Amino acid sequence: MHVLYLALSGTLHPSTSSYELVHGRSPWTSGHQEYEAVPWLSGALACWPDVKIVLTSPQPKGDDLSAVLEHLGTLAERVISFAYVDLTTKNVRQLRTRAGSARLLPYSSEDYWRMSKSDIVTKHVEWLKPAAWVAVDDEDMLWPTGIADHVCIVDGLTGLKNAAEQDRLLTYLQKNFGPAR
Image (tube, rainbow, N blue to C red):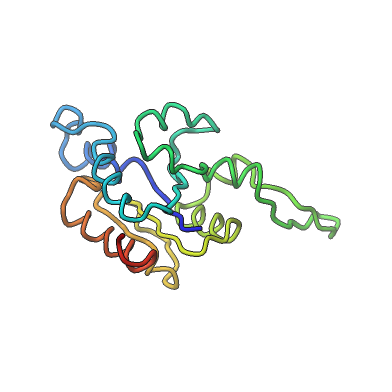
């Protein structure tokens, strides 16, 4: 299985908090729209028809994907899961109790929301074990150096609406999933 780990805010549209911090105004009053890069990403992934998507954003909180999927158009057909649901309900990890015994438990909601994006993706990759994967995100902190060939960091002020960011992601997709078909 080939998987694209996809962040929403900062990737498919500008990160509201970053944009407001830098420009002093909302991206929505500056001509941007939520999910504005969805058409481009849909077209780009048409060249890799077997790529599935795992959403990694803190949106939507909990397991309600329906609102997000409505905005994703044809990309919604590729979404196989939301990392939050997988890590808090399906993935189990071994934890030691105070008594010294071991228990298998999923991550709690609190554990998940305290994780960095790099932890979320690496834990999900360890659990899902995709044959090939790429993560696209605007969060550039704490990614292990050993996975740099899999992590496409984009500018959170423009996301994938920017041609340079689009070219960067295409390079990662080709490197990890093979030539476009």
